[in-house]
Length: 245
Ligand SMILES: C[S@@+](CC[C@H](N)C(=O)[O-])C[C@H]1O[C@@H](n2cnc3c(N)ncnc32)[C@H](O)[C@@H]1O
Image (cartoon, rainbow, N blue to C red; front, top):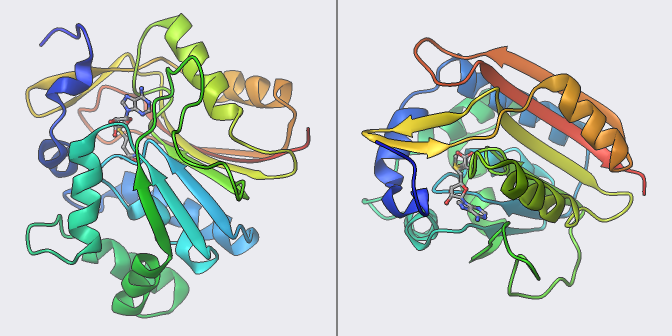
């Protein structure tokens, strides 16, 4: 299906979750391991997750460190999907295998880790990375110790100008001295969920490294895994970096 207008009008949380998180394959295990390692290394207390979608896997290891997580997501349907999980609704997507996978890494208990994450999520709020003014409506206080953003900035447009806008809005959220923790599709122009296509902007490791250096980041760690068979992207890139200025 062609990508016209706001492609996210046809986004279905259920189809997306089924397509990308239905099982913990190599890509998802790679993400969980990178996040586990990152939050072993770093200790951010206040975390903002930008473009969280209907997912919470990206915050499981984060909850080991965080005392306060604010989730920001563009679509109400996705915010509601996360609320269903928060309320332990039988209608929620089953994230329990992800908690068990992280429990193996932490040598902990899946149920205790799930309760830990529920406990630290402070809010689920709207965001728009294409905004010309503030990208969030709520308070900026306290400012975040870490910005977490997974498959968002490169997965919402294929237009170069729009991508630059979203990129600079995302970067503007990371305070000096604080952390950026991201995952991105490698070299994608689109990705699909069920019958629907969504736009992507192609990024790769060398370009990302150069962009981050230009933004004043240091201790840049970039790791990639090739895509699983039949995907529209070449791989998955995980990134962590500290903003110096
Ligand atoms: C590929 S999904 C990623 C979801 C989740 N973070 C993950 O790791 O699977 C892209 C997300 O970006 C959100 N999005 C779409 N337009 C946006 C915008 N203008 N600003 C911020 N996020 C947007 C979508 O609603 C969707 O949840």
